[in-house]
Length: 116
Image (cartoon, rainbow, N blue to C red; front, side, top):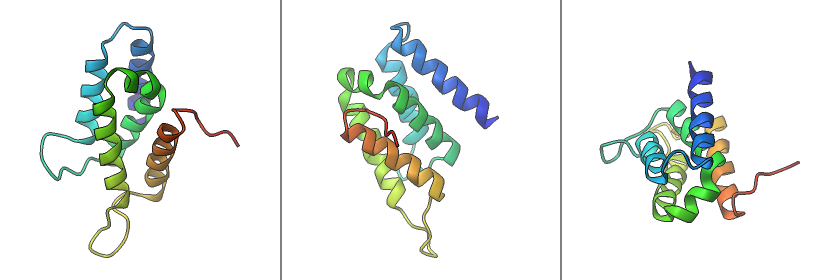
C-alpha cells in the first residue's frame, strides 16, 4: 500500500512538471498531508513520506510559483522532526527524521539532491 502511495506521489509530481496540473493543486495535496485540518495535527509517517516525495520531485518548480506554501510546509516538517514524546524519544522514526532533513537540506541547496 505504501509503495503504491509513493508511486502516486511521483506520478502527481510528474504530471505537475508537465504543466497538466496547477501548482495550487500540488500545494493543497502537500498541505493536506502535512498540516491536516486541525491545529496540533500529527500526521502519520506515511503521509510525511509522501509529502517529502512530492516535495523532492516538484520543490524547485513549486517554490517558484507558491513559495509561501512550501515555506509553511517545510517549517512544519522541521517542527515535527524536532518533537519528542513524553519518554524523550523522537515523535518520528529515525528514517523519517532523516528523510525530512534531506528535504530541508535540498531546499536550502536550491532543490539539488545529495550525491555521495
